[in-house]
Length: 382
Image (cartoon, rainbow, N blue to C red; front, side, top):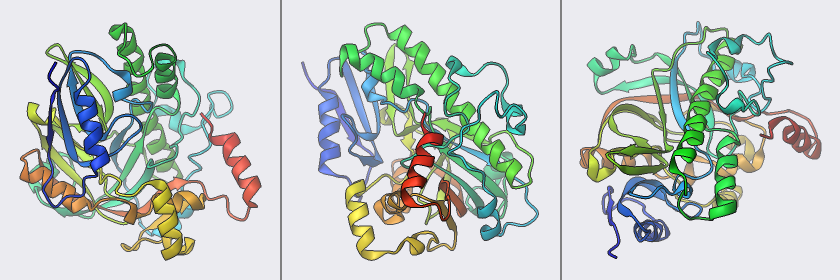
């Protein structure tokens, strides 16, 4: 049986690791696979590439991964003054989960309409680790004023950008599958999709909860998201399962493609066709492993240097290792990723966002290291 086709939507000068390409071809050899579309933010993942859309007649849960429902949402926010130092100090502790009984009077609950998907109340209102973040940003350059205006955005406006997933729910779903089938296909696609859809809805709800928590903490009113696109999911299109792992739906959607905490991000109008798996990139994409970023970062930077970015924005992060692992230099150039999408006619930039405060994990101040880790573990586990 012939392997599926593999198309890489990147220029010859873009940073694409050979290991990531090898993973694309390994996926292409799976039974039922039709096409693999690799985005310019492509990089190696656990068992499957990150930054790819993979079309198959067979549903493979491992191609979506454990963080089902991970995505990025953008919320407008109105503040009287946007002074990063003062606002950073007012960010809520997004490692501390909202518990329905203990926190029943928290105003953030107002954004919850109906039941919690799958009844999964663990980790509600928390951001998680890795590349997840909540960021207060300002709209920078507007490339498409008409499109931005339809979204209600103008240069200088403030937005909250929330990047997070299903906080343990997706991992539970994948673990139940792999315990029986390993990396094999779903034996009951409808049953998997029902659980998957719960995790996608949960991730979206959680992004709204976090945006509401931050808005209240900063003295603003919560708003509806202007953009909320999931980039870890599978959808059924014309009888074909389209798996996306680190790839955002690009069929006529508005998508926020995240740069790093020290660079612009880009709001784009996506118009990708079937050759690209109806998808676009979801971010800058890593160019260093976490171990490499930690080793190189410690040789070049101090912790305090990493708490303020080259753009003058501030980083809230009490986890020193995470500061190094997620340093801007660990990622590809977002400008190149966007240029590749434009060159391949997959997206049109609408506006940039400029970071002011990027929240990664609570900074618990002077708590001794061991106590701080224990405190975080007790509150943030989900």
